[in-house]
Length: 153
Image (cartoon, rainbow, N blue to C red):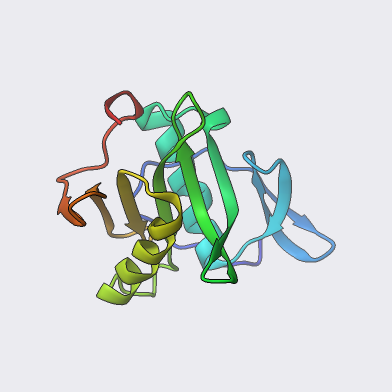
């Protein structure tokens, strides 16, 4: 692999890599396709692997690059986690490891939540991870010490 992949603050994931016609690629098991490796995609694939293998999130209840319509503009949530009735429960936003997790990142994911109304918002750059529980009625949130296992959503 010619692409330089940095170590992340996540358990080592069993990701599939290859050198394809377009360059170095990583397999996305949720979308069932090969994608060019970008720093953000590296974080996404390692983070979703962590959710599945360490925290029991069912692959069949997670989706990557979910399109939403926000004020007449098409946006994409990086990952959405659903409950067994297929109601959205969590939005996950990824940034490259070189991008700091700032208030603007939380404002971005908060805007997405105006459409989906989930209970959990999670942000990761692969090095730092933040999760908060949202009370959509009072418009308040509280940061959690860790990302909850799927069984606790």
